[in-house]
Length: 307
Image 1 (cartoon, helix red, strand yellow):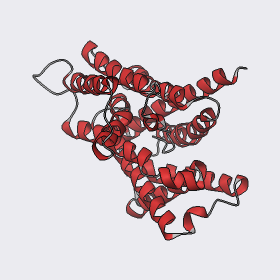
Image 2: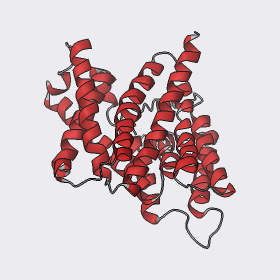
Image 3: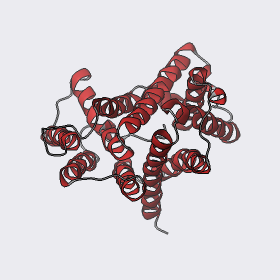
Image 4: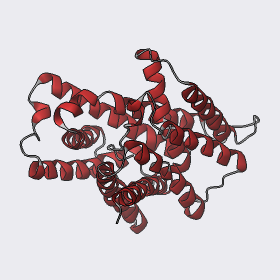
């Protein structure tokens, strides 16, 4: 099979798994009494432990590199904080809205990166980037209002957390770049996932909670851990070795698409034409921004955080 086609298929499947993870998370949050921290602690502990174990086996010489200097360890802690922020805002957005809205708003990561580069690195935006930013704002407006100014389709908390997920996702892309170049993305991300699980567990003693572990809840959580985190992460990392980052970024737009389809089929989600147009506008900006330009760092967003 052609490597390009295989890589695209793997990236697309990873994105579909992430979208389905959002839908499974919505079921647990809205139907089974789970809270967002419940969806972060256990899965990050399991996924992080597995990936660190693999790093010990495959990359023994560098696996403890993030702990060999104070500077590297601080950078790792900052990276961990961005993952916690991205995860928490994403699942709180789902809790107060739905997985489709969370997926679309989280997809604004490249737009936040673009804004940070303009404000803090004083890089001039191209006409393409300005138009993409305007289209994304219009898209968010249509999703939130459903085309009517009389009421909001999305709660204010859902909107704030969804945009916050995009914002923290941008920090997740920008802040660890120096450490990743020194140590490698696999090692850094594996430790960050494990530390995320440990940190969240300190505040979320899931073993003391009376969670509704029905058969549906067990299957949904198992899907989140196995397919939505471990398999999706591995598929996307493997795909990144076969295809350019801009193509992988385009494949990620299937995340909110799959969440929307699953929401309509299984969770009673309804979408009007204005919300659909808004979602298409936002995802279109992601695809357009994924086309290489003078700001290549915009398009190196890899979904190592599992959201």
